[in-house]
Length: 436
Image 1 (spheres, rainbow, N blue to C red):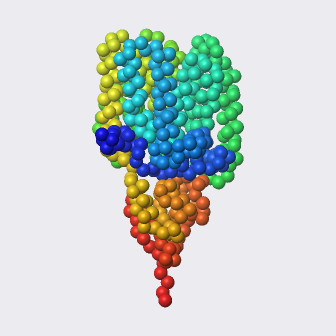
Image 2 (cartoon, rainbow, N blue to C red):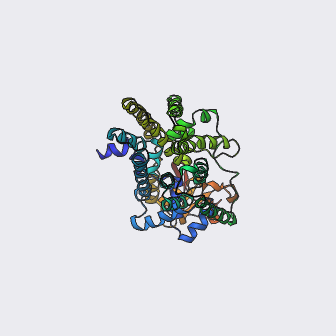
Image 3 (spheres, rainbow, N blue to C red):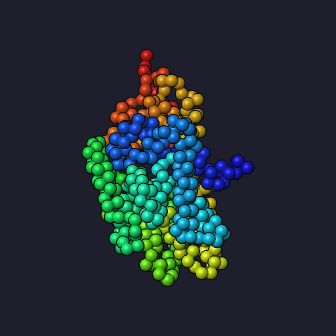
C-alpha cells in the first residue's frame, strides 16, 4: 500500500530527492536571520519563507520530507481560507457542492504539486488568499497582517495589492470599514523594502534570466496552463489543453451573463486577479519574460474561486455538480502525466554511492552550476567544486549569491586525493598523478 502511495500518487513528490531550488532553500535557511534578509535581498527575493524554514529546520530537521512539510502546512492552511470563502462569502449551503468545490482546490495539479516542494509558493498562496478574504470581508487587522506578510513572501503579491486598490476605488460605496489609508501603509512598506533591495550590491537585475518569451500556444491556452501548471520543458504535452482552455473560457463568459454578477465587487476582484492579471503577465512577458505558472499560483487560487463562484450561481444544481466533476476530471487526467513525467532525478542514490566510495579528502566536482547545491546537500558543501567554469560564467538566477568564488576550480586534485566528477546523473573518478 505504501509503495503504491509513494509511486503512483502525488505523494511521490513528497519523498523523492531534492532538486536545485529546494537545495538552495535549505542552504539559505541555514544562515542566521540577518544573513537571510540581506542575502535574499541580493538574490531579489523576499525573505519570509526562508526565515520560517530556518526555524522549521531547527524543530523538525532537514530531511527531504521535513523541508517539504512546511509547504504542506501552508497548503492545508490555504484550503482552510478557501473553505471560509466558500461558506462565508459564497455562502454555499449544499454539502455535496461544498465538498466537491473543495476537491477542485485540493486536487488541482499545480497547487498540489507545490504542496510537496520546499519553496515559497504555498506560503504565497496562503497569504494572498488570506489577504483577499480579509479584504472582501473588510477585516482590517487580518487584512493588514496578511498583506504585509504576503509582500514579504513573493513580489507577485504586488499585483494582488494593486488589484485591491482598484476594486476599492471602483466599489468604494460597498466598502464600509476598509479605507484608502490602509493601502498607504502597505505602499510605504513596499517602497522601503524595494529601496533596501536596490541598496544591496552583488548582482544586476537579470539580463540572464532563464524564462523565455511566451509563444502563441501560451497566450491561447493561458487559462489551461494556469489551471495545470504546464510548462513545455517538462518533456510531455497535454493533448486536452485546448479543450480545457475552451471549457474555462466559456464558463467564465457565462459568469458575465448571470444577473448582476459583473456589478459585484467579489466577481470583479476574482475575475481581475484570476483572468486579467495572468493574461497581463503573459503579455508583459513579450518585453520582460516573467510568465511562469508557479509564480502565478495565487492567481490560480483566485481563478478557481471565480469558477466556483460562477458554478454556485447556476440554478440547476445537477448542472453545477456536473461542471465541478468536469474540472476534477481535467485535474486527475493531468495529474497522471505529472506523476509519470515530473519525477525528480534520484540524486540521493547517486551521492550515497559517491559517499560510500569517497575518503575524507576527496571532492565532488560538478560540471554544471545547477548541480552545486544538490551536491552540497547530499555530500558536503565544503568539498563541492564547480569544474571548468569561471565565476563570471555562472548566471545570477541559479543562486549565485550563495556560491563563493572559492568553489570554482579548473584543476584536478593531486593523488591520493580524488575528484568525483558529476555530469547530470553519472560520475567518473579522476586525479592528477605525478611521475616518479
